[in-house]
Length: 325
Ligand SMILES: Nc1ncnc2c1ncn2[C@@H]1O[C@H](COP(=O)(O)OP(=O)(O)O)[C@@H](O)[C@H]1O
Ligand SMILES: [Mg+2]
Image (cartoon, rainbow, N blue to C red; front, side):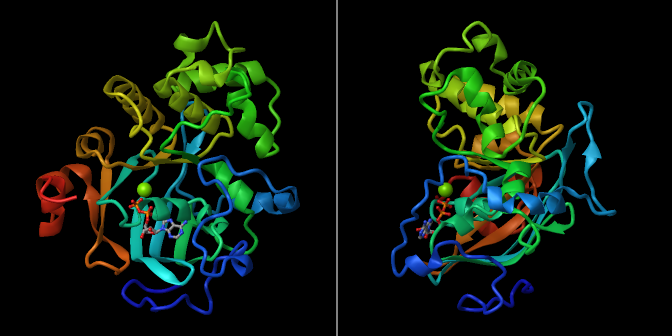
């Protein structure tokens, strides 16, 4: 939509985003939706689902051993606004199939906002706008004929604070996303086991599947949320500081899970923990607000090893070595 470096100061007249609830927003920045919860399906949007499922000829997904695919997510020239305030400018990032991409940078530089652009959750905030292109295997996820519910099925999200459904059992929590996205499964028990295994939780819970999800520890709850995301067979998983509320041992287990999942699923993770970024990611993008009141930008991105050992921008070096942030 806009070339990087050619960003307008105000939301563009051709902003591609269908802004939900903007008419009610005014100066109020507080979203009227809980962005920490899975987004319910919109039955009205269902007929367009095939559009985003259909793979273009140039699709880069590779079938994996269990038949799932992982996808290439490509953001280019993305700028984002909240009620007219620009918080991100000209962000371009290629998130490679079957790899983990970490988003790093100080608080408030737009990492979570950028993450929410990648599965169309940003538009759930009243007054939110976006310009730029986000392509999933070459298909523009903001195209008019694309169903946002299907986008959110293919691009799942795991939040900072584990959020299992409190009134549901462990097994029902795993299957909850299926109902929200209107998907049916022939073998729910098999799917529960498969997803819990992939999330690294099966051995710990296999004898207590009917107990409440809240009976689990924080780390187990987060893996339950990962299992819930996996049940709808996503191609991409977005994770917003998934370990920040967890102890080091649970953190380690989740990091191992992420490394295993990334064979089949493209993962984008926000982390404040520089050691975690190095342990878990293949590629890294460093976000920064250069001056108070200015929008955040991606200073540089590339292989994690290079960003941490030989970054091209001195600000990246200062950040990854802990001189600020
Ligand atoms: N719902 C919202 N409404 C208005 N402004 C927001 C909202 N969410 C985030 N922001 C603003 O957008 C900027 C980027 O925030 P965020 O993406 O949360 O940063 P990070 O995840 O890097 O800490 C901040 O200035 C923040 O105040
Ligand atoms: Mg954040």
